[in-house]
Image 1 (tube, rainbow, N blue to C red):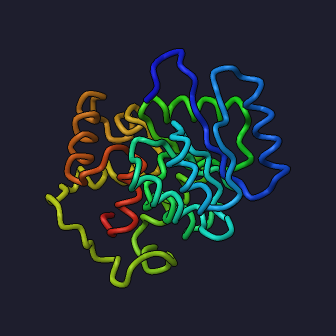
Image 2 (image 1 turned 90 degrees about the vertical axis):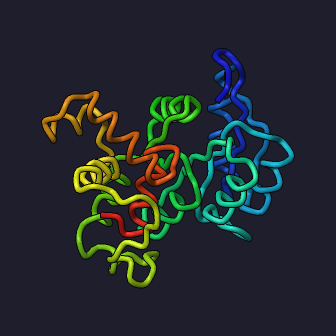
Length: 228
């Protein structure tokens, strides 16, 4: 997390030069951002993340040499404090689940409006997480009964939970499913007829039991380990 008013250091990972140039040009118009590096493949991204110590990485997925999933996993393993935002044209099941499982803090489609992208970056830099609404719906579909078997990235037998941590109650699983669907705490409260404070307590409990830091990681773990 950066201090208020400080410059946000951005590493741009995109294999199309024209796209990189366009995104860099947009960032150049905003003084509170600095593009510290541009990588054309995943291997370069890992090297530059170490060399330039960015605050946030805008990560494409379909990259040469090393894809965005592998690059994200390596960057987050070495520098967990670095925020990684998937910025991609793809929302296929394997890519969505793969990026979330690799530790991405957010997932945006390239169709996102610029103002929305700025808001997402601010959210991530404040310690939050973000899923594009289309991606949130996809995660929700993957969490439906029977969907695990069809998910290309799901391990054999994923329909039965492989989770080894503290058991989730039926209410906690219900909360987890709504988290994965992209519902806010207030929306969860409204749907389940619970107070906002009660929902916040449940969310904290779920994150603690799953040993994750945020809602995106919780959704990824739910998909990966068949918790729903």
